[in-house]
Image 1 (cartoon, each protein chain N blue to C red):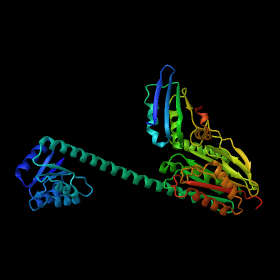
Image 2 (cartoon, chains in turn cyan, purple):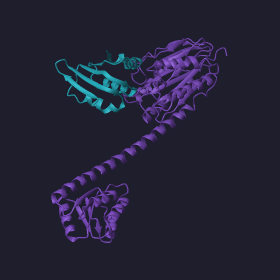
Image 3 (spheres, rainbow over the protein chains, first blue to last red):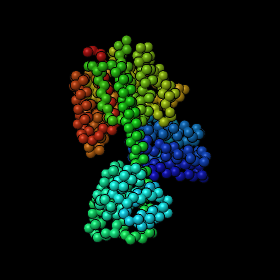
Image 4 (cartoon, rainbow over the protein chains, first blue to last red):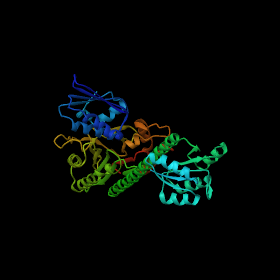
Length: 100
Length: 383
């Protein structure tokens, strides 16, 4: 499975880790990862430290997630490599996401 | 599940029928070669049991014949035979048998084998169904991609023709990946340029292209300012696209004197190759089009200038991510090298052709995954 979800109720955080290629093939799984939770959390961490490639469909999936969860919750994009960070910055995702 | 039992001995026809019916298999029994052929065609069984010796012909011939008649269907042929020498068994399998059980046979063993074959038949049927569905969807997607290309080609015909100042190249891959390039000179002599890249592939990626084209050519006619055009296109796309789709793009206006104003969102840097070989860049500093609601949308422009002999080159990520047969991406610095070298050529169309040749040479035998868009512009000033 290239997506794994872990929930920490104490810190009110959900971590979604993605492995390999973050692309259109994960469309349904990625949506399920944040929408199948029983409640909204304060912080969603997308762990991209093992993502090798990301395409524009993945950017769209992140935007869709941003729209789906509560506005007060923040989404942190963590551990992206230089190539992917560049893609995120070109599209100014720092405006909607916390890029670490 | 239907079984055809071919046996010349009534007692075996009876035993096999009883065993199979216990497994809820419907059974038809026949005693001779000709009856077997007729029954196979009319009854359309899922499995067949047969003996080596059959009235009116041989089991080997029968199995060959039945396999031919099965065509694409997988129908297991199980020999139940009194002749159990190695050479007979060998001949059975060579003729096309799927299993061999010696007579007299153990009922339990027969039932287990029967169930195994029933499972295989089910699996094969399932596989056939899925394969058929996949083939259907693949054909449909190919059609959609064709249609996307068609829509786009139609749009592209309204763009300005290539000339000494404008060169647009699209190298199409099998699937349309959402690149769009439009250039048109306005009545005041300024040239409006849109280079965009929609998310996704195929038909969905082309849907936004039609209203964008309309807004673009309206803006050419109305001499609409590009920040206003950016707002308009953003509003259109924000309205029609689902939230996971958007369009990265540059909107550029170049006046006759080479003044250049642009809005860029989500695109890789565009290159300005100066006449002396030095480089300058256009940089995207906004989110792509179709993401932000109008109240949050930022239409701030950036400015630059094209002097005599300078070339503005905008490439889609299909160029940057072009792979050679070693699976290595072309990348930013190699693209820059290419541009530095080839656009020194005075004839823009020739420069473009040479660059194209170089790109396809780099790609070599590997498959082009994405459409490639390459737009080169020179200023009309002082020429």
